[in-house]
Length: 120
Image 1 (cartoon, rainbow, N blue to C red):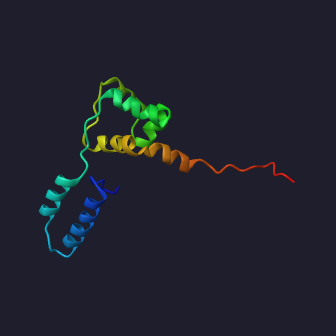
Image 2 (image 1 turned 60 degrees about the vertical axis):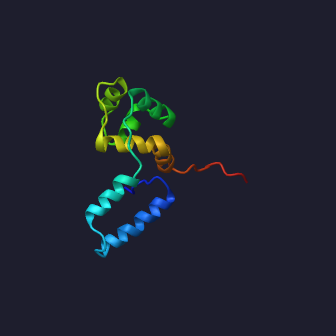
Image 3 (image 1 turned 135 degrees about the vertical axis):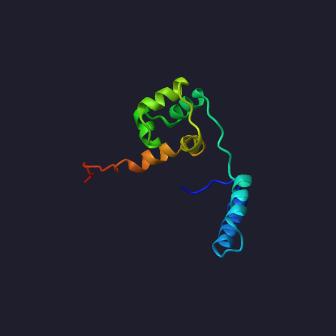
């Protein structure tokens, strides 16, 4: 998955610094400092926000869970506040929130509409 930076300029700078790391001009530690400073932060989500994300996507709990690669039960627990996503499990939720990924994936997975009744 591609990293998300605060701006297009930061993305371009990262690409350059990554190339510098590839030729050993800068080290891994410098890259970690760069990523910490310039990557978009992933903020914790409240249960109401998780429900709002699913509602905005207009998908069922099962479809939403499938896109997040978790169980429907876990989505329910998160919406009720029994479980809190953190770390790696929080990133996909924030991406869906920011970019409506589920909606685009669903549209891409739908089969093309064929008109069997062609006009003559």
